[in-house]
Structures are given as structure tokens and as C-alpha cells.
Amino acid sequence: MRQLSQIPPIEKLLNLPEIASYHTILSRTIVAQIVKSQVSIYRDEIVQTHQVVELNTLIERILAKLAYQNQIRIQPIINATGIVVHTNLGRSPLPQAIWQEVGDIVCNYSNLELNLLNGKRGNRMGMLSQVLQAYFGGEANIIVNNNAAALHLILKTFAQGKEVIVSRGEQIQIGGGFRIPDILADSGAILRDVGTTNITTLDDYLNAINDNTAIVLIVHQSNYYIEGFSQQVDIKQLAASLPEHVMLVVDQGSGNHLSAIPSELPINSYLKIEPDLICFSGDKILGGPQSGIILGRKDKIEKLAKHPMMRVLRPGKETYALLEKILIHRLNRDGKADNRVESLINQPISWHQSRAKQLVDIAPGKLILRPTKFMVGGGSTPRAQFDTWAVALNSRLSATTLIERLREHTPPIIGVVQNDQVLLYPVTLSDDELLIVKDCLMTLTAKTDF
Ligand SMILES: *Cc1c(COP(=O)(O)O)cnc(C)c1O
Image (cartoon, rainbow, N blue to C red; front, top):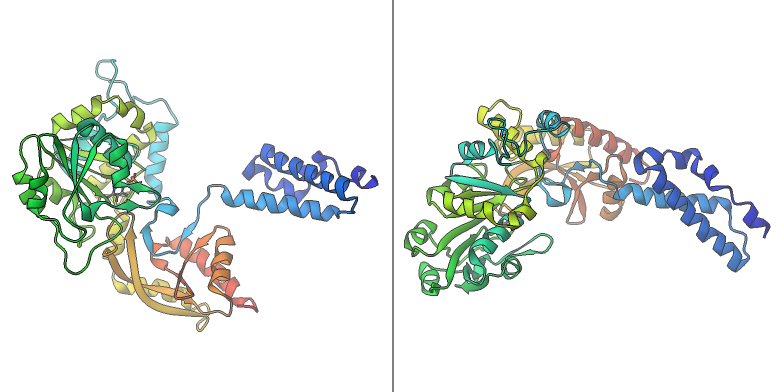
């Protein structure tokens, strides 16, 4: 077994320059684990087959495992999908200026749960409550880890063992497995579905109410819409018709506020109807950290705050600090935390076109200007689409190969495939990212196989 004695010591492999370059990004410990396990597989192969296996093969296998590890590491990527709030891509990027301000709070001790006025235990919501109220309205508020948690807490607190009425047109699934009927069942509430997929009337709701009804739940249709013969209830009329013992709760989802998206009813319009509670995500259109924001009547919010589950669902200090800071800057309109969705929608079409043209000019013919639509995404309806210009890659290579090459770029560039063609949307790129994509396209289109 002369082969065996020729395997270099682990330490030596670890310090080979191409392997050592992974130490800082993956940790020396994990690189060592990979090296050891590959050496052990290599050793077994030699023992079992008595075959000569090239040492280079071992090193290549180690490098392949390290490259794999590097891909699953969380890292910045470039979103060229034209979907502004993309759940797979971390939803809303936080404003850099806010992150720095919050760094001072989270990297030091803070008064998270200390009342500085009297030295006693304080409330995590602190000033955030007033800020949320100044920004959105509503009598009172509270935050939890995400909107799914918000809805779960509301149902558990007010509808355990009781009936919750939901229209058949609103029993949606969102992304990875969030299903309204499942959340309802898990919270201990009983689903009472009413109406049909396309039509639910006021009477459908009212006729379903009995003594055991706790909530009428309105769910924003989120990721789909019904076209054609369809009718949803007038929520204002519904709110006015509900008996005293039935709460009106709205899962608004996207957090669309004011008129960020003209085709959707925004939070402030819902609040005018005075639902008992309304909940939505903090990291969709609002552009804040992952959180579920609940607004509504004071007595109801107090009940949520006192529920034992609140201890399970409460966010960390980063979330409170980020939300408070972002909303303060929004209230001041000082440009430090502008609403990304709103700014993009308000850009003139010439802005969109000139960005796309900057890319196309690198290699006209190989890159083609394409008028298309960008989407808000993240739980706003698919109707929230706006004009933009994208760049189509006109190549001999298959769309699958191209999209893969873009993904292998550092940083990875994520495009979309439409009709077997790769499209890159400059609308979702920052100015710096536009330059990176430009460089990447320059190299890619200059290759002989493009
Ligand atoms: C996105 C969404 C949710 C889930 O929100 P998370 O913050 O991702 O937990 C729930 N309901 C609706 C209507 C949504 O759009």
C-alpha cells in the first residue's frame, strides 16, 4: 500500500493555497472537516480497489466540496429578476444608513426592557408604539417575528375553539407552505368557509355568524387574483353589519401603505373602516426588518400583549431598533429610508430605459433591449406590475447554461428565464450593481461560445 503512505498529511492539504483561501470565509474548522472526510473516502477507495487514484483527484474533490459549501453560505447576491420584494432573495434590503445607526444600539447594552424614567422594567415596544401610530394610524399596536406569527397569535388569542369565517376566495397559500386553513387549524380555531371561489357576498358572511363565531377574517389575496365574473364584499359594509361579539380582522400581508401600489387597498384605507385588528409584514413593501406588525383596538392589542405566546413570538432588539429608526426617518422624509417600491414606481420610463440601454450598449445584437413589466412581489397582487425595460441575452448557449453562469459569478447575479431566454432587469439593481452586471456581461458576451 505504497499509495496510502503518499497521502499528504491533513495539515499540508489544509495549507495548500487554493484550499487555504477558504479558511476565512468558511472557517478553518469546517475546511478541515471537509479535507478529513475526503481523505478518508480516498483512503478507503485505495484499500478496497487496490487501484491507483491520482492525488490530484483528491484535491479536486476537496475543492468541489469547498465550492459547494461556499455556495450555500449566506452572501450578497444581485437581484436582476425585476421583482422588488423577492422572498427567496431576502425581501427588502435595509437602508445602509439605518443599519449603521442601529449598530450603535445593538452592539452596546440598550434600554430594551428598562424604563429610564424610573429604573424599573420597561416595555419592549418603547417609543416604537408612538412611531407606528404616527406613521400608520390605529389606536394601538404590537410587533411579532413575522406576519404568519401575527395571524397565528391573533387567532390563538381570540378564536381558540371558536369559529372564524373566511371567504372561499381568500383561502390562499403563500410561498413555502403558509396556508390560511393550516394556520387556522393549528391555532385551535374552527374554519367556517363561506361563499365561492369567485363570489362572496355580505349575506354569505352574515348568514354564517352564530354564537360561537369569534372572527370574520379578511385575507389579502396576495399572490393571485381572480379575473372575470368575481365579486368581493364591501368591507366597510361588512364592518358596519357585524354583531358586537364578532371581530373583524384583516391579514393585509404586503404592508402597502398610502398609495405605494395604486391597485391595492392600502393600510390607511383599511384603518378608516376600523377593523379590530390588521396585520402585515414589516419586510415587504414597508422595507423594514422581518417582522409582523399588528395595529388595531387598544383592548385587543393589550390582550395580545398579555398572551403567553407573545413571549414565544417576540422579536429581538435589532427588529425594534430597525423599525423605529426607519419609521422616524420616513416621518421626517429625509431621504435616508425612502420606500424602495414607491421610488421605483415613480421613476420615469426614460430612467428605466437608459439603465437597460447602458447594458445593451456593451454588445448590441448579443444583448437586446426589451420592454416589459417589473413586479412588486412579496404578497402584493400580481396586478402590481409596472412598465420597465429589461435586457435579453441573445446567445447560442441555452438559457439554463446562461442563468447558471450568471449565478456562478461573484457576487452571484440572479436573472429570470422567459420564453427560453434569459432576461436581466436593471430596475432592481443599485447603481453599483449596474456596474458589476456591466462588467460581467462584458466578459460573458466576449467569450467565443456566447
Ligand atoms: C406574506 C403574507 C403572509 C406571511 O407573512 P410573513 O411575514 O412572511 O410571515 C401572510 N399573509 C399574507 C396575506 C401575506 O401576503
